[in-house]
Image (tube, rainbow, N blue to C red; front, side):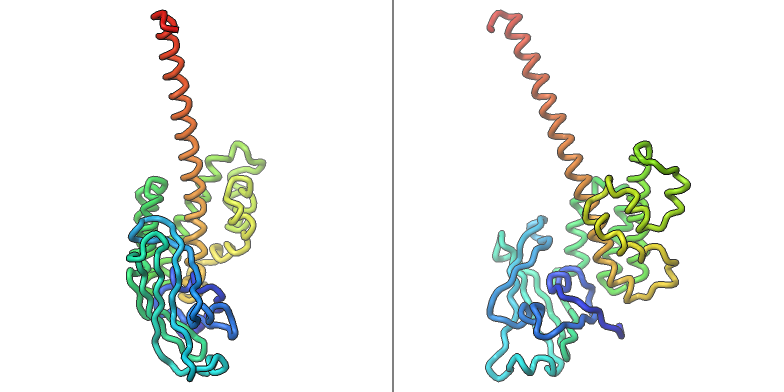
Length: 275
């Protein structure tokens, strides 16, 4: 890729950004401190070994005495490494190799791969996605991991649109507008219209979804890749909310069953003269 993207989030860079995507760092900045500092920073993400969200300790390099901070902006091109260690188990380590040149940084390798990490995480939502969405989610993650922006974005956009459509269908009896009016709206407008039925994160940032309205031929590979983590995380937010609702419903049903079982036991005890 020829262009650079502004970023102030090393966590996003390590855990969400595809290989070879150039990120322009500011200096001095917290980003550089994370990559080149004796102090250890933290990052939250999915551990493919625990199969759970965890907190990682970021361990990068630190500048030696002959490499002053004032020379950082003019640093010659070289590769370095960063390790993320899971808080649950010191043996659960994610390894990253990056190239930095004049404060432009690119990941040039990582293990496990971005696709392995993201697809392991997506297993948590398999029961909340139909067969088509689950397959396309997997394909989108794989394509993005290999730097295919437009193709990966198309799959994610299709999934996101269907999720929003399903949310409208589930709630349309509670809404004040007709189906034709809803379908004519741009994506950012649809999210605003459904603000009471979607996670607050989406509705408070609805304008960022205007990127989903233009025809795909109007979008560049770089634009699609830069928005890919946002749309992927937005899908996950919705699925997390659905998962929580489903779990709460199961808990209420289990509790109601326990009450019924107790009432049946109590009635039997009374009938038998034990109470």
